[in-house]
Amino acid sequence: MKKDEFIFIVKLAFKNMWHYKRRTIITAASIAMGLAMFIIVDSLLIGAEKESENNLRWYETADIVIMETSYFEERLYKDINHTITGSAKIVSRLQENGYRVAPRITFLSEMFFGGVDFDEEGHIATVVTAVKPAPDKEVFKLHSTIVEGRYIEQNSHEAVIGSFLAEDIDAKVGSFITLLFQGKGGFFELIDLEIVGITDCPNPNVNRSLLIVDFNTISDYLETDYEAAEIYVSLSSFSNLNREIQKIEKILETNNNSLKVVGWEELSKDYLAIAKAKRGGSALILVLVFIIAVVGVSNTMLMAIYERTKEVAVIRSFGANDKFIYILFSAESAFVGLLGVLIGLVIAVSANLYMVNIGFDFGYMMREIDIGYRIQSTMHGSWNFLSMVLSSMFCLFFCGLFGALFTRRALKKEISDALRDS
Image (cartoon, rainbow, N blue to C red; front, side):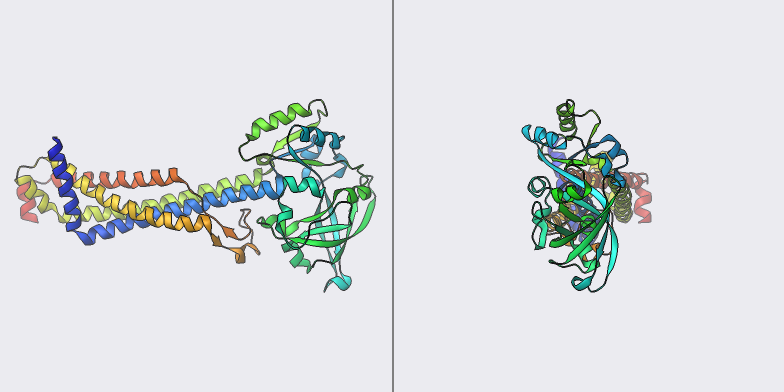
């Protein structure tokens, strides 16, 4: 086909598209809405996953955790009898190699509250996290989420509590609580603590259960000889997790061969499995939505071709061959698809700008239910340009394909039959 002939067909296809304005607008709108919904929902899902992963690392697991192998295997029980021998030396060694490190002890306790500080008396099972305030601030971001009061100080009988937990027991800054827990030797201890801060971080799981106390103070009661049960390591955003785990393992080989070095992904297997299942289910729904939109578009185009059977016959009677008609109607369908794609991209990009920078506030839901994501209130979107390009190309391809397929059906009729039946 000559260049001039091809240009003529393209121009004619463009004119034909606007000759049937109503049909063009309806078809383009269907494509636009299907494409926009796909991109918007995809953006929200990816944004929720990325934000959840960040909130896991910033407030729960850091990037890497070092534990005794025996402690790691039964970590859910928070057994303080498996602390890391020589943890202070390990921390110093890692710091010398440029790592940001935070030693912690996590243990189970019964928290008692009542008296003049609370409206009601009661007790609740809690997981207590003992931290060293200065290094902990370098690894985790909890100190920056204090909404009332302040962060704990070293060597103090103070506590910081999560906002949801504080609401549940009606705790306020200045209230006193009592912890009952079992020490390393199997004995029980009581300690009174003053709540000096309430944190409201973007991770709802932390807000539901967080209780932070001072590492040195609690070590005296636990009799753990100031040894940490967990050593958390924070990496830069550009670090390779597996490579850094291998580096740390080499650093620690001379210190203790019984240590377990794990990344945040291994610690968060349950969450990642749930997120993967959610992603698969959501992807299936998105595909079904997209298929419905494609079927609607194909139906509209099929009706258009059938209504224009006489037009096809007239063009053929003037000597136009099948190739000319194929290209003409395929180009016309592609133009309609392109119009729908452009409108859909404008809608999706505009919505995504809002979702990425502002987001949707679901705080009224997150307090009472757990949706699986580590998101406190606002769900943000994320830019996924590959998805935008692929979904747009998908729309254009199928629009052109439908145009060619339905044109083929119209060409099967003899010219005389088409003119007589129309």
